[in-house]
Length: 98
Image 1 (cartoon, rainbow, N blue to C red):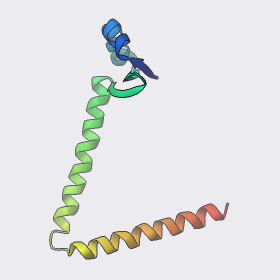
Image 2: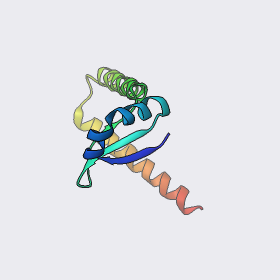
Image 3: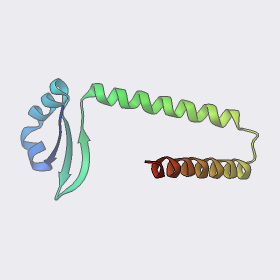
């Protein structure tokens, strides 16, 4: 599998070939115009995998929201800030010890 940059002209000229490469070889293409990324071409199998991961993440978010439905939003924000700060402290400690 490889990831390739292709311009819009190449996509117009070789769409069938690019689709085959994505489907059969798992190649991924970043389609750009004048150097600016516009879209990505991936296999349908990869698209489905990404959709499943997205749905799983949203399911987790929904479960968290339900579990915290009665929580005070300001307290949740403080708890999150405290947890993030602790993770950052631990990360600094672990990188300083190297």
